[in-house]
Length: 234
Image 1 (tube, rainbow, N blue to C red):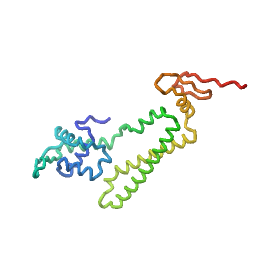
Image 2 (image 1 turned 45 degrees about the horizontal axis):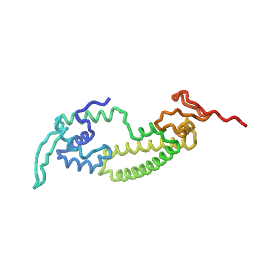
Image 3 (image 1 turned 180 degrees about the vertical axis):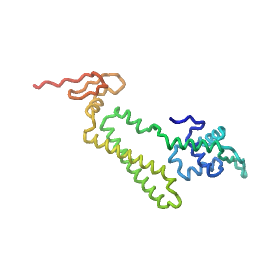
Image 4 (image 1 turned 90 degrees about the vertical axis):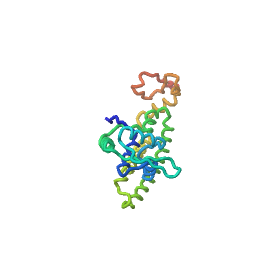
């Protein structure tokens, strides 16, 4: 279980990591983060950077070592990491690397309620997602290859988060591809029920009970719902 931290914003983790190299002032920290593409691994709200810096100082993880002004420029404060900050950084990294944690994604949220849309629309949306994933993955692979080719300047240890991201996106693409195969072939379990539920028009907030055509297998979770009787042969 994740610990409650005095500064829980992952931007704080990244700033502490940067300050392990040398003291920096906030604008310099932001420039280094952008230069190294850290915003690809950590969701960064650049407008909150100064607030995070203040919180790190408040809790004793960093401290000001110099306040300087150049010409008419505003004063800038240079910070360094403290011993407490180094201990917090190491403990935080050990937690993130060693302890699996449930992470929630927007895609997973969409899947959880996707049945509100009809199977044909969901299939089309997933097909579009797969095409986008494959394009992104191809570009990601090309970028990694390019970076590896200049490995003397960019050691692999500084690329492994990009490798992980690409691996996760490839796994997602494989999963979506497999799901599409089931949807396209009609072998996805409960497909007839899903289609009949959508076509019944009851998913409109009215509370109406759906009536399903005879032959549609209704999952037990839906209880006893009426089915239309088939017309007798004339």
